[in-house]
Image 1 (tube, helix red, strand yellow):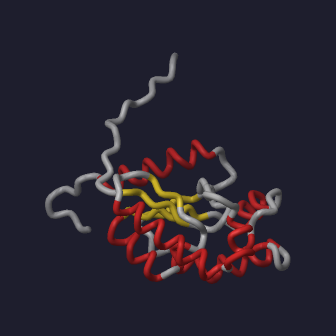
Image 2 (cartoon, rainbow, N blue to C red):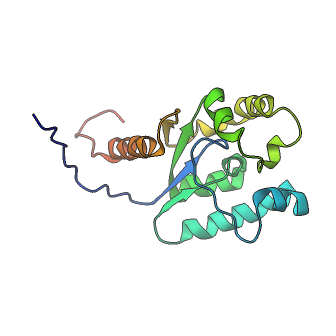
Length: 170
């Protein structure tokens, strides 16, 4: 008997969807002009975060899209406030082993360059996860293919945006 897939209506999202989470959580990254590691080395993290805030603000003022932010972007109170106001935030939460497995093969992570990466990731998780938990939605990012995580994000958005019956508790 053939498997029949359920056809769902296209997802209509009222504003930009912003992905947040630690490095290796599964966000897509792109840097213009130089790598993030080069930027950190040349100008430092504070200047990187200020530039990141300006870019995110500009992107959130534009047409709706999916915005994949850097691991530290949501930690900045001004950036977090902008994202709360103008986007639906989705935390891609991953455990330490998943994050470490994803980042250990790549040497371009400036925050991991000064010490043992697994220990640094663990410390960042302790510092950042309580703040990431403020996101509108949380989706587990496990050691599964990215397309499965993408489907889970879409399903979480669909549930979040579904109309609530009259009188239902919010």
